[in-house]
Image: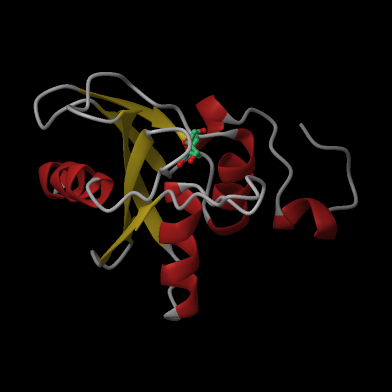
Length: 142
Ligand code: THU
């Protein structure tokens, strides 16, 4: 996987953020198993609750285009200006990842710059997550 390319795409996506209220800018770049990249940014709203996170805007673009298999997401978020902190994905975005991604395989990169980033699995960030398999399974979850 070309993780540097994905990280650069998240930093670039952050420049698209619409954040007149929080001034907290987030960019995300989602890579499919076939290597396609979909970018997203947070888009805020005067009524606040309609705000969408960068991660979900990337997922929804990709799913709309017919993508269903994902390998990794890079997330770059910090107060406006230089990206100078790590922004972990919110719980709602982790749950959206759980819908489409294998928690053991899916990689999440938290990005400060193209040189500084951390990698996690979805399973590490959402232990014992509820996903589509739970609707089929008869036995208790492990
Ligand atoms: N935000 C994201 O885009 N992704 C997250 O996972 C956490 C929060 C956005 C939402 C809002 O526009 C701003 O960051 C402050 O919460």
